[in-house]
Length: 294
Image 1 (cartoon, rainbow, N blue to C red):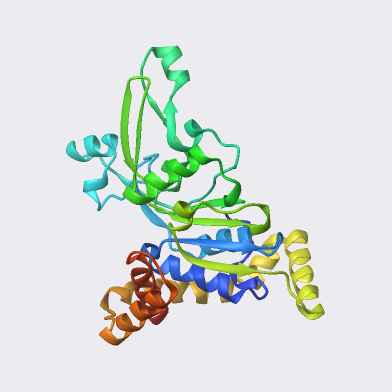
Image 2 (cartoon, one colour; image 1 turned 135 degrees about the vertical axis):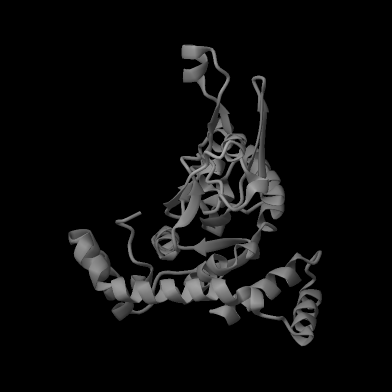
């Protein structure tokens, strides 16, 4: 994470950066879907944004990123440690977890810890990518090519915020709430409608169309690759300003009221576009509130 390209140094792509910032201010907006050309800074932007977020407080060495103040969502171990007064806390960076297209369901959801089972005969759970992504970002490149069984798993977890694993005599439940960020090229395949519905905001990106912008992208990337520390230092002040902006927006967003006329406009827009359900209005309301907070 320390060597991630600075978010503020990304050339152009204003809509993508804004969508990610809105989701950082209010994760309830839902996931971010970014479709477009390869090499347009999608992964770079997600990792760069995570560096701007304040470290999160995690319960001890919890592998599920449990939040000490949220006792209702404790994993079994944190619940036991809290009951005995042994629960400690620490600061940890906001996680950005990649979900590879070829990942197995066990790798994503978690599975029996075979090493412990073979060595000690103990049935223990090995957390998967969903546990690692809790309270952070889960990034899927070429999300439209994701296998159906993983799509079904993500749909269940995205709807409930809880990952449930029942196999080999194990029954595990743990919180799994994250900002889902998917990217891909629509020419390579369609995204299943059920999964598309789980993305609150959608953005199209493209490579710069003018020579000066393309040259600037190449120059900045080359400077970062040659000397990451010096490049990070050069952009440290602008990243710090964005970090403060996001932090203040998070603090004041709950105090922002949404006027009825804004809700009426959102509902009218959704009706005009034939949007099913009310999730569209909720996403528009939360996005407008986050934008106001920024």
